[in-house]
Image (cartoon, rainbow, N blue to C red; front, side):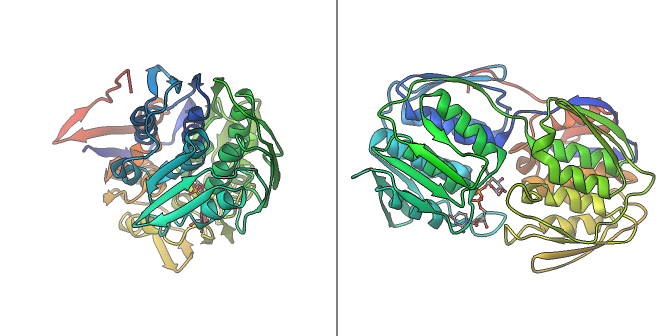
Length: 430
Ligand code: UD1
């Protein structure tokens, strides 16, 4: 595995585009198994998690083909509704296949996703929701098994607006006999994108983006074509990098409405932020303001996935900032690494107190999870001297052309393997 080497201290400057959303592509790829037809999904980034979703589809019997950013999935024949453990372990969000596989095949089986870098990843809400619409779900020996049984839909209330549970329920209920009403549903833009794709396949779903989603079951779906929404967390990453380096950047192919909470925080730091259609322009202030208290919340609140990035940015704020992580238990692992670069952060439980410093210094640091890893990269862009980021496999799970995009904005950043500079390889096929 390669490391990322950054010679920091240059303000980012210029314009770049933003990839398609990982968290939209994954459930949408799972949804392609709901019909006995062919779907084309555009805007698919080249990511480890996307490759893993395609492996799961192939393993089930689908035929997948990639041409550029378009992935074609022919789900005419599904041979297997059990997801191999190796693929479940590769990507925790494979659980998003549970609802779709069960609805299509009448049954599905997969191992429990277990904990991950962010702490425990329970699926109790997924299971409870599926049971409430008539699906029989059993857990045994670390495996979860679902069978459709009398699958009539029903009323479901989520105790917490879980993104994954909302997606699983939407996909399963789409092929039920009756109507399902889901309350306290997640409202993330990726839920709206999934509704939009499912409706193109012939589903009858309304209400995504509000806390009540109605799904009228249909007897069959057909293949559809869809372009996924832009990745709001990648956009947030690039904007934080721009702000942190004292830069002036423009992002194209974004959906500014999806990151309203992030733009608001950036404006509070003193950055000038303007939006024009699908473009976002940011001009950093000479010194960033601290943020009194930032709390992660379900959408439309501040996204937990952008927490590490903003934490990194606030290390250079003028004064003390406080960040509270309310969604995941263990999401401050990057803070220790940022401190190796000269940041002054104290964490206690779910709170991080960040005392702003005037500069960071390049260091050897280790990415321990996806967004925390990206936070180290943007810190490296702002730091004086050379930063080497290891553990880059985590970063590859969510960023397609991170290094190229940063280079386009003038950064000195490259991949190194055994001392040599390497270029990114792209393979067609899956
Ligand atoms: C999705 C995103 C992830 C993002 C998260 C929150 C994908 C592939 N991943 O993850 O990037 O960080 O939303 O915006 O889209 N929970 C339970 N029981 C459950 C399910 C969840 O207790 O059955 C808890 C989780 O432990 C966590 C919280 O609910 O504390 C949020 O989880 P959830 O919204 O389900 O996140 P994911 O769908 O896993």
